[in-house]
Every structure is written in C-alpha cells, then in structure tokens.
Image (cartoon, rainbow, N blue to C red; front, top):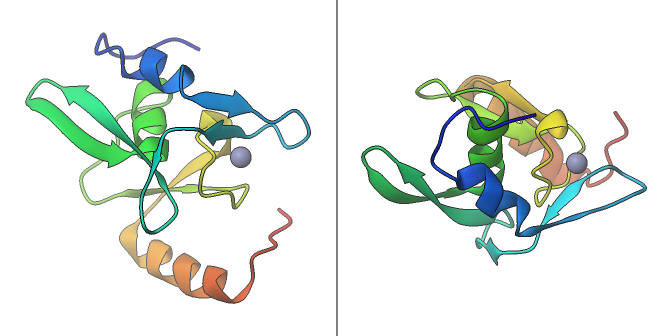
Length: 109
Ligand SMILES: [Zn+2]
C-alpha cells in the first residue's frame, strides 16, 4: 500500500493511529469532531483543509473521492481509518446508513 499522492497525508495519518489487533481497525488518535469522527488537516494542491480522518485515509491509500461521495466504515467504528474498512457510498445511502446506525450500535458485518 503506497501513497497515491506526494502530499504526505498518508504518513501523517499513520503517525496518529493505533492498530487494534482483534478488529484490525486503525483507531484514530488525533482530533475528534463533535460527531465522533476523526479530523485531520490534509494537504491539497489548493491548500490545507480540515477533513474527516477516514476520508483522508481513503484519499491517501485507496483512491480520490468523487465529488459528493461519502466514505463510511464497514466495521462501524467511526474512529477507524483502516482503508480496508472504508467503503465509498453515495449521499443517498449515507443518509439511510446514519438513520439505521442511530438505532443500533452493534453491527456485525
Ligand atoms: Zn475498522
């Protein structure tokens, strides 16, 4: 797994995580937003910007995120930034996911 870009975002992201051996999750250890997601400053060609840590991870290790698309954790852990646990979804699914998620914290998939 290597960076798709030379921004250093991936390296800085890896410096802020703790790997959970049992779940395989990469637990974000940096700033956390009110909504419970990790936040990190990402470097872009257009300048620095605060971004969700899991989105930054996806962009750094998987692929560029299309405009309007969302990223969610398949493991259900909002602090997880393991690219293998991240999946891209469209906004419509995201709304449904968040509704469903509010009711049930335990997801086994
Ligand atoms: Zn995970």
